[in-house]
Image (cartoon, rainbow, N blue to C red):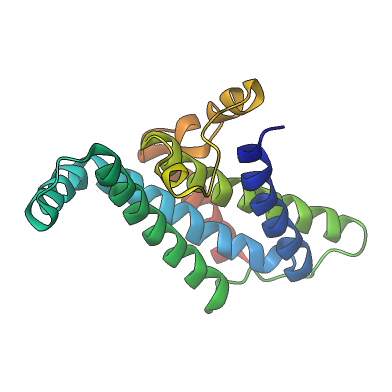
Length: 181
Protein backbone atom coordinates (compact mmCIF):
# COMPACT_ATOMS: atom_id res chain seq x y z
CA UNK A 1 0.00 0.00 0.00
CA UNK A 2 1.11 3.49 -0.72
CA UNK A 3 1.13 6.34 1.72
CA UNK A 4 -2.22 7.80 0.67
CA UNK A 5 -4.12 4.54 1.28
CA UNK A 6 -2.54 4.24 4.71
CA UNK A 7 -3.34 7.87 5.53
CA UNK A 8 -7.01 7.71 4.61
CA UNK A 9 -7.35 4.11 5.80
CA UNK A 10 -6.08 5.18 9.21
CA UNK A 11 -8.74 7.88 9.40
CA UNK A 12 -11.41 5.30 8.52
CA UNK A 13 -10.01 2.90 11.13
CA UNK A 14 -10.09 5.52 13.87
CA UNK A 15 -13.69 6.45 13.02
CA UNK A 16 -14.59 2.74 13.06
CA UNK A 17 -13.14 2.38 16.57
CA UNK A 18 -15.06 5.46 17.72
CA UNK A 19 -18.22 3.88 16.33
CA UNK A 20 -17.50 0.67 18.21
CA UNK A 21 -16.97 2.60 21.44
CA UNK A 22 -20.04 4.84 21.06
CA UNK A 23 -22.51 2.25 19.84
CA UNK A 24 -24.63 2.05 16.72
CA UNK A 25 -27.55 4.09 18.12
CA UNK A 26 -25.38 7.21 18.31
CA UNK A 27 -23.37 6.42 15.17
CA UNK A 28 -26.51 6.27 13.03
CA UNK A 29 -27.28 9.87 14.06
CA UNK A 30 -23.77 10.85 13.07
CA UNK A 31 -24.24 9.06 9.76
CA UNK A 32 -27.15 11.38 9.06
CA UNK A 33 -24.99 14.45 9.70
CA UNK A 34 -22.17 13.13 7.49
CA UNK A 35 -24.55 12.28 4.65
CA UNK A 36 -26.21 15.71 4.92
CA UNK A 37 -22.74 17.31 4.69
CA UNK A 38 -21.92 15.28 1.58
CA UNK A 39 -25.29 16.17 0.05
CA UNK A 40 -24.90 19.89 0.75
CA UNK A 41 -21.37 20.10 -0.59
CA UNK A 42 -22.24 18.18 -3.74
CA UNK A 43 -25.31 20.36 -4.21
CA UNK A 44 -23.46 23.69 -3.95
CA UNK A 45 -20.09 22.72 -5.43
CA UNK A 46 -20.85 23.43 -9.10
CA UNK A 47 -22.69 26.63 -8.23
CA UNK A 48 -20.11 27.83 -5.72
CA UNK A 49 -16.88 27.14 -7.63
CA UNK A 50 -17.28 30.06 -10.08
CA UNK A 51 -17.94 32.40 -7.14
CA UNK A 52 -14.93 31.07 -5.26
CA UNK A 53 -12.78 31.48 -8.39
CA UNK A 54 -13.87 35.13 -8.63
CA UNK A 55 -13.16 35.72 -4.95
CA UNK A 56 -9.76 34.09 -5.37
CA UNK A 57 -8.85 36.37 -8.26
CA UNK A 58 -10.14 39.50 -6.47
CA UNK A 59 -8.42 38.83 -3.15
CA UNK A 60 -5.16 37.31 -4.30
CA UNK A 61 -4.79 38.64 -7.84
CA UNK A 62 -3.00 35.42 -8.64
CA UNK A 63 -3.10 33.08 -11.60
CA UNK A 64 -1.27 30.32 -9.69
CA UNK A 65 -3.44 27.28 -10.41
CA UNK A 66 -1.82 25.20 -7.66
CA UNK A 67 -2.58 27.80 -5.01
CA UNK A 68 -6.12 28.17 -6.31
CA UNK A 69 -6.63 24.39 -6.15
CA UNK A 70 -5.30 24.41 -2.58
CA UNK A 71 -7.77 27.18 -1.72
CA UNK A 72 -10.74 25.28 -3.21
CA UNK A 73 -9.74 21.98 -1.65
CA UNK A 74 -9.23 23.52 1.77
CA UNK A 75 -12.51 25.43 1.51
CA UNK A 76 -14.49 22.21 1.05
CA UNK A 77 -12.36 20.23 3.50
CA UNK A 78 -12.85 22.80 6.26
CA UNK A 79 -16.61 22.95 5.73
CA UNK A 80 -16.87 19.16 5.71
CA UNK A 81 -14.67 18.76 8.79
CA UNK A 82 -16.59 21.45 10.72
CA UNK A 83 -19.96 19.81 9.97
CA UNK A 84 -18.60 16.35 10.81
CA UNK A 85 -16.94 17.60 13.99
CA UNK A 86 -20.20 19.24 15.06
CA UNK A 87 -21.91 15.89 14.54
CA UNK A 88 -19.39 14.13 16.75
CA UNK A 89 -18.90 16.83 19.40
CA UNK A 90 -22.42 18.17 19.76
CA UNK A 91 -25.75 16.62 20.44
CA UNK A 92 -26.62 13.94 17.98
CA UNK A 93 -29.85 12.28 16.98
CA UNK A 94 -29.88 9.05 18.95
CA UNK A 95 -31.87 6.13 17.73
CA UNK A 96 -34.09 4.60 20.39
CA UNK A 97 -34.60 0.99 21.24
CA UNK A 98 -32.61 -1.62 23.07
CA UNK A 99 -28.94 -1.93 22.28
CA UNK A 100 -28.31 -5.41 20.91
CA UNK A 101 -26.31 -7.71 23.20
CA UNK A 102 -22.77 -8.83 22.49
CA UNK A 103 -21.56 -9.86 19.93
CA UNK A 104 -24.33 -8.63 17.59
CA UNK A 105 -24.33 -5.11 19.07
CA UNK A 106 -20.56 -4.80 18.73
CA UNK A 107 -20.63 -6.07 15.15
CA UNK A 108 -23.40 -3.63 14.20
CA UNK A 109 -21.60 -0.74 15.94
CA UNK A 110 -18.39 -1.64 14.13
CA UNK A 111 -20.24 -1.84 10.80
CA UNK A 112 -21.92 1.56 11.22
CA UNK A 113 -18.60 3.04 12.40
CA UNK A 114 -16.88 1.57 9.33
CA UNK A 115 -19.50 3.13 7.05
CA UNK A 116 -18.95 6.49 8.75
CA UNK A 117 -15.20 6.01 8.42
CA UNK A 118 -15.62 5.31 4.71
CA UNK A 119 -17.82 8.39 4.26
CA UNK A 120 -15.46 10.69 6.18
CA UNK A 121 -12.10 9.48 4.87
CA UNK A 122 -13.53 8.99 1.39
CA UNK A 123 -14.84 12.56 1.33
CA UNK A 124 -11.51 13.95 2.49
CA UNK A 125 -9.74 11.93 -0.19
CA UNK A 126 -12.30 13.02 -2.81
CA UNK A 127 -11.60 16.73 -2.28
CA UNK A 128 -7.88 16.09 -2.51
CA UNK A 129 -8.33 14.05 -5.67
CA UNK A 130 -10.58 16.40 -7.64
CA UNK A 131 -8.28 19.34 -6.94
CA UNK A 132 -5.07 17.51 -7.87
CA UNK A 133 -3.79 16.64 -4.37
CA UNK A 134 -2.80 20.20 -3.43
CA UNK A 135 -1.73 19.16 0.08
CA UNK A 136 1.17 17.34 -1.58
CA UNK A 137 2.69 20.78 -2.20
CA UNK A 138 2.92 21.12 1.57
CA UNK A 139 4.42 17.64 1.90
CA UNK A 140 1.44 16.23 3.82
CA UNK A 141 0.52 13.47 1.40
CA UNK A 142 2.19 11.60 -1.41
CA UNK A 143 0.29 12.20 -4.67
CA UNK A 144 1.91 9.21 -6.41
CA UNK A 145 -0.95 6.74 -6.45
CA UNK A 146 -0.32 3.03 -6.39
CA UNK A 147 -2.49 0.78 -8.56
CA UNK A 148 -4.59 0.02 -5.46
CA UNK A 149 -5.12 3.72 -4.77
CA UNK A 150 -6.09 4.37 -8.38
CA UNK A 151 -8.73 1.65 -8.08
CA UNK A 152 -9.92 2.90 -4.67
CA UNK A 153 -10.51 6.40 -6.08
CA UNK A 154 -13.31 4.93 -8.18
CA UNK A 155 -15.08 3.91 -4.95
CA UNK A 156 -14.93 7.20 -3.06
CA UNK A 157 -18.43 8.15 -1.86
CA UNK A 158 -18.83 11.11 -4.22
CA UNK A 159 -17.58 9.04 -7.16
CA UNK A 160 -20.01 6.23 -6.38
CA UNK A 161 -22.93 8.70 -6.21
CA UNK A 162 -21.78 11.90 -7.99
CA UNK A 163 -25.20 13.56 -8.01
CA UNK A 164 -26.52 15.05 -4.75
CA UNK A 165 -30.02 13.64 -5.34
CA UNK A 166 -29.36 9.97 -4.36
CA UNK A 167 -27.85 11.13 -1.06
CA UNK A 168 -31.35 12.16 0.06
CA UNK A 169 -32.46 8.51 0.10
CA UNK A 170 -30.30 7.34 3.04
CA UNK A 171 -31.17 10.54 4.90
CA UNK A 172 -34.88 9.82 4.42
CA UNK A 173 -34.45 6.18 5.48
CA UNK A 174 -32.58 7.16 8.62
CA UNK A 175 -35.18 9.81 9.46
CA UNK A 176 -37.97 7.26 9.01
CA UNK A 177 -36.12 4.80 11.22
CA UNK A 178 -35.74 7.48 13.88
CA UNK A 179 -39.39 8.52 13.73
CA UNK A 180 -40.62 4.94 13.90
CA UNK A 181 -38.43 4.30 16.93
